[in-house]
Length: 134
Image (cartoon, rainbow, N blue to C red; front, side):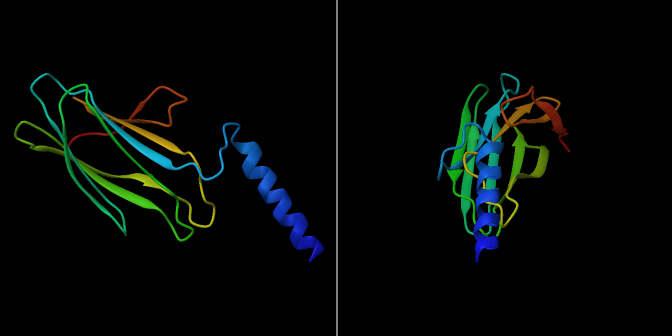
């Protein structure tokens, strides 16, 4: 029992110290921004094992976000993005992936749809091109 208590204490300290902005029970968030050209509309559809978030349409400069708590089993949000007005350019990707037994709090994923593809950042670094339109 003593070893188990020490192990849990060490794990708790590691999790707490790994994130200076740690807030217990803070929801994770996924953010989308449309940086497309003036006449392009961004169409977004995200799903998880438990939720279908429906379709959302963003004009250039607009944003859409959703928040959730990680599941102990595994949290995943798979998203499809289309670039309009004819929506012939498409990208599919995992917008959020939790690690299962390690529950995240306050994790932020930022996705920026641009003319040349989808850019990603956690907000602490410059966004990098992650996916090209198909």
